[in-house]
Image (cartoon, rainbow, N blue to C red; front, top):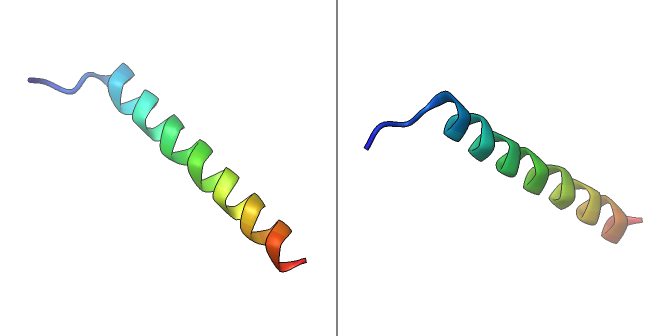
Length: 31
């Protein structure tokens, strides 16, 4: 089972999107 560059980029994009949504929700709750 080898990890290709496309798979790595897709996982990175998903994690990045989740972190952005999490930061947005946290900031919205604080305000």
